[in-house]
Amino acid sequence: MRRAGRGMLAAALLVTAAGAAGCGTDARSLCGVVVDSTTYADPATSRADVTSKLPAFAQNCDWMAFAAVTGSSESSTCRQDPLPIAATRAENPNENPVVEDRVRAHRVQQALPRAMRLFDCPTEGEGSDVLGALRYVVKQLAAQRRPDLPHELVVFSDLINNRGDLDIGRLDLSEAARKRKLDELRAAHLLPDLSGYAVTVHGFLRRKTSSPDRFPLLESFWREAFEAAGATTADLL
Image 1 (cartoon, one colour):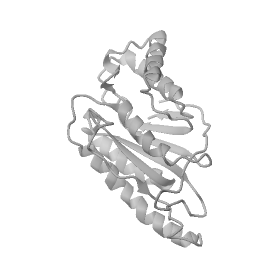
Image 2 (cartoon, rainbow, N blue to C red):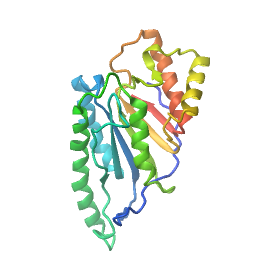
Image 3 (cartoon, helix red, strand yellow):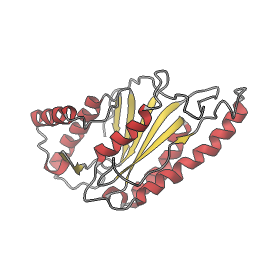
């Protein structure tokens, strides 16, 4: 798939109520992970993507939120707690890089098991509510924002949203119709606020249930959707 142009705004970590804050010598990104537990989860390649790609992604994160794509993502009971990765000030008051590296190495190892558990969410209605999962993960990240470090979002999904006001299978993909749909979603506050995020999607259209001539139009729709949501980049892989 083609890659969107680069250009990343800064955003990241805030001190939490418990007094946690990124304390290492090299502050990194505020991160979100979305895992699709619907039909996308069936092929072994989907789980292999998470296993092979998430650990490297986590290495660049100071804090990580998780969300599952289900049939009802925002109200889902299938959750994983956010994962602080950087050492807190209490854990590393002298900003010792050796301490930071030790804490980070231990916590990075927790990211993969949490993400993999989201593959096995119970069925919650028919279809896939991708937009709901994006909104939910962004709500968690919004509470942590600070405009001096990057925001990154990795999405393991085919992006076949077919719940609520967006049914990809029936969507009119002409240029004018795509614009109308995005205007409708924006007006209804159904687009997540991805301002300043770099977004990477793994498994885009993996289960190709549409006609081949719709594939490039679906790519155009999602690129336009991420742009409309404010993302600085969107890589559909």
